[in-house]
Length: 163
Length: 139
Image 1 (tube, rainbow over the protein chains, first blue to last red):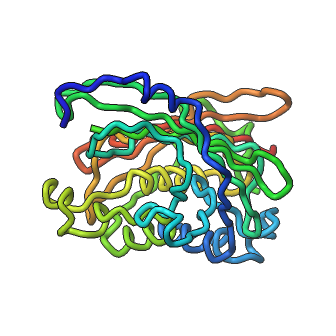
Image 2: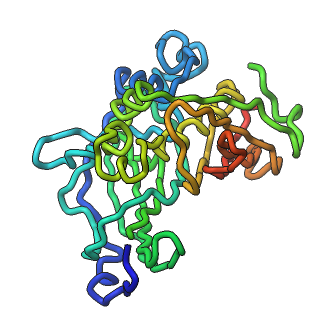
């Protein structure tokens, strides 16, 4: 917990930085694993025939699931699976981490068989103070998901809280 | 299929979804999502010890709100936006209820749209994960 924390010019200079593109895969197995993890009982997320009867090309990605980043030891994060290479971040030294919020905008459908090219951008940095956590750094990341046809199918904006 | 735009009214409550994730469910979510933060499965992890328990992933609650909307929509349309904020912690083996209320119904660019306020409610009645969804109905 930080009593004092201020944004420096060095931190601010990271705003607008983008990661290199990384591949996220949507497969029948990955869709089933996510649906099972959430606890869905809807067969459309498990049974390809049921998905096709519902009008999809294949198993649709359940809401909030945007594919699984390809995992490569040493190049992916050990805990969060996401790529670590070239991710935009501000050096801040705060150790505590909480998820603040998530927003996903969809511009097209995402189904098993899709391969998404994903770029993460540091959108904003902000400092707030709470009674429980003291000074907090709020980072806003904007992640753009482009499918194999070059169409942007989703943009996810997330806030992380460092304290 | 089932749900149609004309039958939806502002103020409608959508059918609630009860969730009571145990440790096994959280482990399945970790595997499905790729989020292996030990705070969601390891009781010996320092942050878990500090809190006295592992906690439910915020993103699990976000996904459960997605399931709430998906179940209601019944593939009669698509979700164009879904958001939430993580305001409070939930713990394994404790029930929370995903709820939603239709806040707005309108047509835009020829699309039949509906906005829904969504949230998770803990056993103590706290809204730990408030959010919003927008869907487009086919008919």
